[in-house]
Length: 237
Image 1 (tube, rainbow, N blue to C red):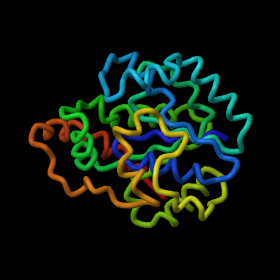
Image 2 (image 1 turned 60 degrees about the vertical axis):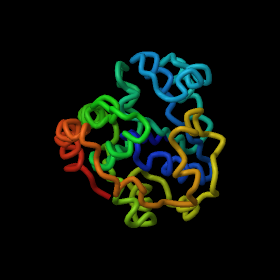
Image 3 (image 1 turned 30 degrees about the horizontal axis):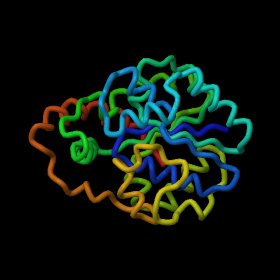
Image 4 (image 1 turned 45 degrees about the horizontal axis):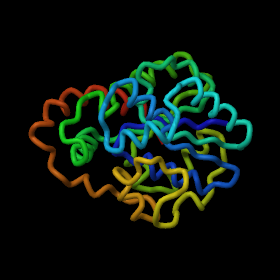
């Protein structure tokens, strides 16, 4: 079984990866298409060269590895950013259990701007998430699941239990906590983005949620809101 978490950035996607990594007979993969995305778009993200050197940027090779790993584990958990699917053929999503993780765009953009100061609509992934949801709803073998991160953070045990039930696996209490620090599956970009998770031992409300939105990001927020609202209408745990 492949559980494909499709998220916008600056969400709890890394915490979700850490949570699923605590399960037995489960393998997690951190953003397998990141190098492909950087090469395809030419974007200069922190640690770009390390990313391009540390992982494949060939979609066929990446997908082949994913489907080979699926044969070895009861659960293969993919943590993916929605925007990393840009330019790909999406048919590989059809057989996966796709979970769309969303976050209020004001909080998302405020957090993202702490690392990349002038984010664009492409950077934050909500448009791509909405498009991917439409594709999976039309062609996917399994009904897509949309999860607002607040539904996990407000009651992690209830939220994770519900999510596990929806994807067809038993909930394990070990998923609620982990040891402080990195895990071996972290991508090479972890040092730029994962500070909060590395300092945590479980699901906690993001500190960035109380920061004000930078004034120059207000047009981006207006542009992003319709996509978030569309995704939010399908949110249910």
